[in-house]
Length: 371
Image 1 (cartoon, helix red, strand yellow):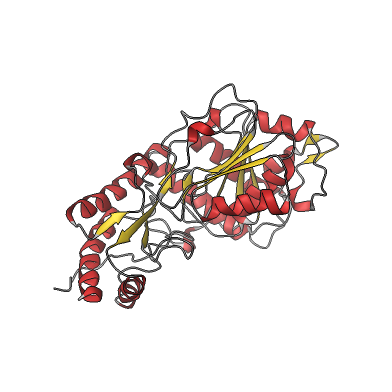
Image 2 (cartoon, rainbow, N blue to C red):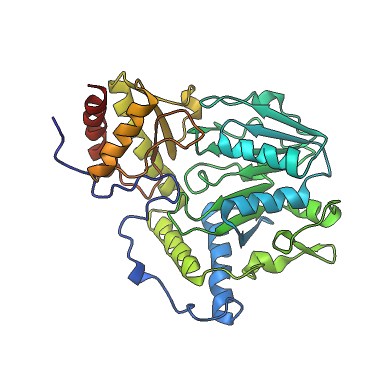
């Protein structure tokens, strides 16, 4: 029978993601609007975005946090175009975004000493085969495959190259071994449910040393330049952004950071996401027509949860459309490059009660489209 109870919040999109519970745009601190981002009040707000991020994430001494243009994509591109080329590079991909970094490295930067290691959706490449004498580019969590690296044990402390990690659907939802990561990027609109167009760039001291000791052979656009006179432009990491940011989006991000603090900090946000995944795990265990795309439970993402169904691609599309029309779940179809299936966001901005209400609707919709 068709369920009666619906999720209070049907927004399960994997980016932009649901706003935090209780979100109210009128509660934002909007004193910066209409002011220059270079005014004292603008610099304070942007500086808080950097310093409060570092505090909540528990970053090691010497790590820098900056607000940069063009979302997570822009942050990754800044790092690759500014730092790669000093050493050979290993790049790993097991879903669409990692594949995009391979394209940039091999076809745009045209690095000759590049080794791409690729795995199918649902799997990880052989992490033991990575050469850490080289720079290494990888995603922490495959947003379009629901497959994450289980931990950082595969990254040696005595590596010679840099680790450049696209962690947009992992930061604030998963434990990150910061000492093993030299460049980490993410965007506000993923785990924190923030607004788009801004990226976050975290640099280790080793990454700073690379920027100050190496100059790429190719020209760098203005929005990629992180040094002045051979030294790191420290202003970027104090809130002096390269281009004009949206101060409304900054206010929204600061609100999200305050909400994380109200959960008890990073550990509270991680625990909430893991509890959300547990709801889906229980449902999958009880139904043989639905499975996780991730083949190894140790690699199962607790944010972008990707599922496969015993159904044709057309039936999956019909199921997604049916749940949308019932205002039960929006935007839960698999990413366009991924195998046909569902992708349900389980980050901390989603409530477990809404996921619990959604599960019976999945059963009902599956019965409807496969009848």
